[in-house]
Image (cartoon, rainbow, N blue to C red; front, side):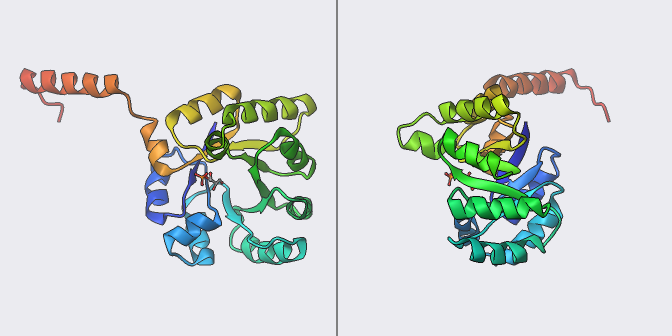
Amino acid sequence: MKFFADTADIADIADLAQTGLLDGVTTNPTLIARSGRNFLEATREICALVDGPVSAEVVAADHDTMMQEAEILRRIADNVCIKVPLTIDGLKTCRKLTDDGTMVNVTLCFSGAQALLAAKAGATFVSPFVGRHDDNGFDGMDLLRDIRLIYDNYAFETEILAASIRHPIHVLEAARIGADVATMPPKVIRSLANHVLTERGLEGFTADWAASGQSIL
Ligand code: E4P
């Protein structure tokens, strides 16, 4: 499973990139607005920090303007992945961009039927929003299971990018289902390393080693 950081926080991305665990980054208009950074500049910096895909989202609602925005965004770097909404205009834009060899992430996916359309439009990634699905009384994991089944039935190559991940259990379940990618806030990526028995074990080893009076260095 690939790990993407769902953030526009450059310092956090730089720190995570050093762990070797980061395969890409996703941003959205809300994350960019929250960062207080200029969209194009921040995207350029992020693209230089990671080798993998960096999703940058168009904000227009119509196909022609989406294409104009995508033209500007895809010139930023080779690893820019254009994010488009799951609307008919977004899907039209997806097809045009992927036919030109540009990576596309179709976002705001909330049903298997929508995911089917994204795959038919040639999307590189489809982003089902697991957490927002849960928030509204649906099971986000059922959504992932549906999409996995549909994509496997037809051998679609579109990667399932589990998005709107809120906690480690979301990641674990998404991995069990076979989502290709999980995009998550940096704190969720870091929290995957936590386990009370790891901490307790380390405390024991550290105390026993100190009592032995030895040193490796
Ligand atoms: C994905 O690309 C989105 O940016 C993101 O996962 C949305 O998450 P949220 O529902 O926590 O805003």
